Length: 386
Length: 214
Ligand SMILES: Nc1ncnc2c1ncn2[C@@H]1O[C@H](COP(=O)(O)OP(=O)(O)O)[C@@H](O)[C@H]1O
Ligand SMILES: [Mg+2]
Image (tube, rainbow over all chains, first blue to last red; front, side):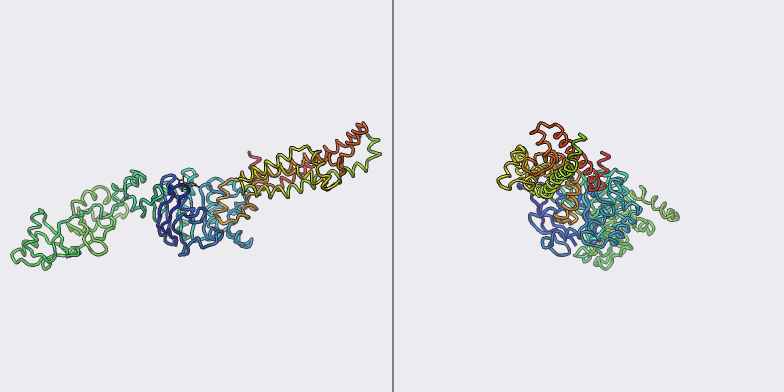
């Protein structure tokens, strides 16, 4: 829907306010740009509605380069909300909300109806229509600021720190309201903030910037789990990094990424050597492409070691396999109830990427998940398994 | 005084009217020229200082000199008088328009621009309405000055209350001088009062509240 293609902005001199930004934003996506002050967030945003022109590269909306569109028309199809709110003090709330519809020459009744309809979305009474901005609180004013951006139903909305000037409680209220609103409206939203809590709360995808460059992008949960570097880690802040919160962990985080493996086409004697050398009682069987086949354990070895068969002939299959990215909480009960000792973790190609062992689970289980799950589900009988 | 009024009553009314409309015409011309020029100058900042400077210098010329200057070009009568007075009306309105429009909150302009208002729409719907309190102040100052200066119009045969004052000066007749000066003051006061009322009308509502509060 919105594409940045190697976009660079140089104001004056040689310093790049935005440096070679390439980004593809999906329709309906809620993208949040975040970074310290001066990292180029506002510049990036304003290049979309051409309040600032790009120095190099191109930006396109629905495949069309924005440079080829009429400037005024382009802007009327993009909602715009700024931190300073920017309601016109000499216009009533209705006139403020209907500004773009008026520019688009909608008839008067249609404009008023639309303004009423929008006020309902934020649960403000119709009587506000004829008030002036100064009669409203800061929070109400910014609600109107948001409605004004929605008025002509643009598919894309730009928001530059829209809640930044509000007190914390109002800010939180508006964030929640807006997230709800966005879900029901299916708009593509480009949102700028320097507040990590806000970014994590609202975003489908977070783009972290530093000195004009993208440092990392990804879903909020991906970023808090896998910060790309110290800058990101520091920016996210210790409190929000979730390594230690088991209820948010995925299987990769507790798996052993280097399990002892043997090849499917080895003969059993070779395999036994490997198992002995590693002092394990179980080895995972894979083929040449690292694709998971099964496992052999002490029992297999006892039974077949005299026959020296190929490993592939004697292996057992795992009763449970899990895909990477699976939340830990979802598999824990399974592994405990079925009393399997090991659970392999595979990727989309069925390749082995690690294994979860009873030992690695034990810590997590006894900590908190088990208890929490119980509270949520009210199922107590499985405790007996312990 | 009563004797003066009974002898010259109707003539006094005519002269007062002349005085009033010469001033008003000059102001009107001033408004028509100075507001657009003031707005235009906000788009050409480099030129602005220069133009406002020139207009300021013109303003310092003695009024009589300006009036005299127009005699060889436009002759005598009301036309040159209105034109000369017009020059004086420009500066306060121009300066206030420039200052007022320049003083409009940049965030509002950015919001307007970002939402797709054209340059003209921003001027018409945002900048000028928001600058009206300052522009109106300029018009009021201008008007009060002009009504005073219009006395001098009689010097080039434009009539008005100046006729009495000059006559009084020449004939050593204080009653003529007073008969000219008092109505000038009264016109000035009444016009200012009316302009005050007009200001309340044209200054957008959301703004007048802020000003009262401020
Ligand atoms: N109009 C401008 N002229 C020159 N430099 C600018 C201008 N606007 C922003 N900059 C510079 O570009 C960089 C990025 O600014 P900006 O995009 O506003 O950052 P952010 O919104 O992330 O705080 C900063 O170094 C800033 O000083
Ligand atoms: Mg910014």
